[in-house]
Image (cartoon, rainbow, N blue to C red; front, side, top):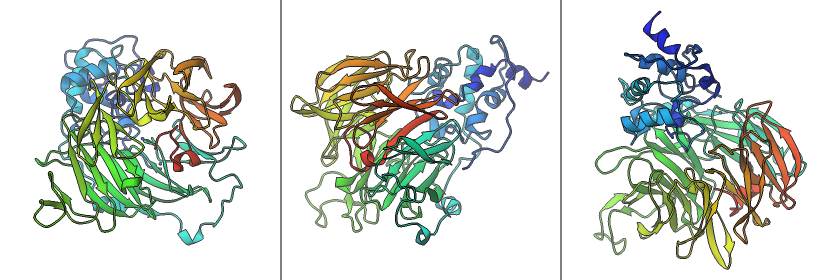
Length: 552
């Protein structure tokens, strides 16, 4: 028996049946039709217990455990790429520990029951070893992937389905790479279609709600028409993509990439690429992009960087003012050194710490952010270009899932934590913590609606992941804990446009997966629809209206 087959025999088949691979445990997860790797990978052989090996075959371990999701070439597929360019700040010690113990920011448990420490060391060494040739995805490759699927002149003027176009839901089903369009009034599916694998980061809607844009982890961006229920264009903007954003005026799409280190600006009309912005600092060091979001009142995109302690703001005006480095008095000649004067200039804010995730205040002048491993969050003023306050938010807050409401006459932000069993409620006037609501486990998603007195939060990362807490927004107390399907994962709540119904994902593969619909007032189950590992669901009206009860 070869060394490779001996090593493969030590990897247990149940690990592969989890459907998640190693880099999800490395916190890169957290995305329509294209597969990232064509090479076949050998199935692992069953084993009852790990067996020590003096010379672990890292390539064999990778082929048995990781290649199925991350590609035989390590450039990603269902999961992200496993190369130094995407692993960023991860040290060999951190990689080894994460392989064995797992990581709270993902659905992936540790591999300590299947891999000996020496095997984890070998695997960590492999994924942190650069490829012989650095992968790139230049403008030429982006252009070559561009497909216009439908002539805009052939699109109907009105919806063909008869449902309220603003009360539709887009439901992402990860189990078989599909999305379902759901009528939010009748609570019935009206269309289901195949997507690129591993959609990620949340779809974005045009201001009128007609079109929706998807991003997949392997870089594919798609535009779908909710009137005619068909895809109209697609393009591959990167190798490993984090998320996308749509400008407030609906003209531009921004794509945040882990690999290559870039921000890509597309025309929202047909996804034609307009600019590829390399993400590097003054020394030439590159960075993955953690997230990009639109700031409509500012006519800009704002991006957080994973490996450089900076925030970038990409200006979208047709004739933008030149962007300057450092402080200045005005825009008269000689008042500063222009950094950029063309389209899509980048305003950089230098920080003392990284931002992995962030949230805008209602004015869009302030960014509330935190790094995954930081002891506290920070408030950054985008106009002053500096930090103005600290946030008492240890335990990896998931600020991208934060929501706001008025509490005792003041605006508050509530956010779950990925590492701690609580929800933090922050006063957005002076940034102090008003309350810490203890939960059954670390959570990922939090949702509410202006018409509802309740906020819903899951406990996605922990032994009680079948539970959802319902919190009274007036008292900041848990009033009910729901278990839609005892023993099965419950996650991600979204309300219909009127706040009448709350839709919950039982995020399991078919036949156990389901969309469970609750009466948002009585908290009683109204209906359930079978689905194949539903994850996020997104209501058109709530997204385009800027509802404070959901993310944007």
